[in-house]
Amino acid sequence: PINGKREKAAPPSLEKAAHSATQPYTRASSSSSSLHVKLCNSLDNLITNFVERHPLRLSVNPKDVLAGNNAPIDELPPTKCTVEGRLPSCLEGAYILIGLNLQFIPKGAYHPFDGDGMLHAIRISGGHATFCSRFVRTNRFNKEEEAGMPINRNFFAVEGTATFGMFVVFAVRVLTSQINPMNGVGLANTSLAFFNNKLMALEELDLPYVVQRYRDGWPVGLWREAEAEHDRSPQGVDGKKQPDVPIFSFRQPSFVHELAITERYAIIPDTQIAMKPLAIFTGLGALF
Image: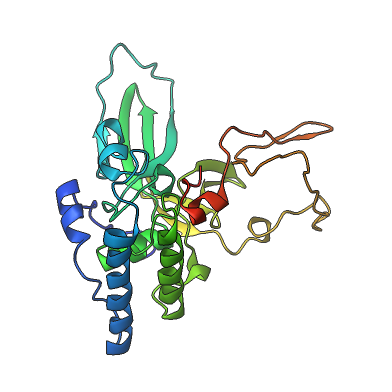
């Protein structure tokens, strides 16, 4: 058990996931909230079937984006690996990678950046290697697992009129307490950081999720790191927030994922992945 809760089963296979995504969300606490849920689900289906651009572009069509090696996979319990050659008996440790995966097949357009976070770990001990994969159990992941369907739309893939519709439906879900953004809306699918003796799964839209371990030593349970002040705002060495420093050299919005700090400089790379916010509202293209 993790945090007093029993380990949950691995998510359904692709066929089962595609089927369960069509089931209604019935966990509302009252007839009024149930009506709100049904309304939002109906609006989601309306946008997907009649407002979204069809046919979908290859770069956001789930049939193309989720093909081959990019197809969603189930969680994998600790599984012994076949080793070609020999692993030194003195080699001890684990390599953990975070990547993108899906709990449910998306209803409409999908961009890989909207995938749920999944941890992949290889543990080496005593000349043997063991592999394990488990989802990052974010608040968003748990809410959709309870609903049995995706209730957070894929904002990276939408464009044109559908964008406004999706924001409206999302706002209605928030106002009717179906989604509470204060509990987290992020996917924790971007990177891992080891800080203050904690392994954290990160994404820009949310606070870090701290990786917990089962008694067998494998990463699985997570909780949102909300209590630490250093996770909420940048702090100087004296404990006080330093003044913001604007960067005027960027000619267009870009994905700034990395930062390097030297003795005298902070180096911020201007990547080739440029964002075009107006393009998604005018229908002239996607966000990237």
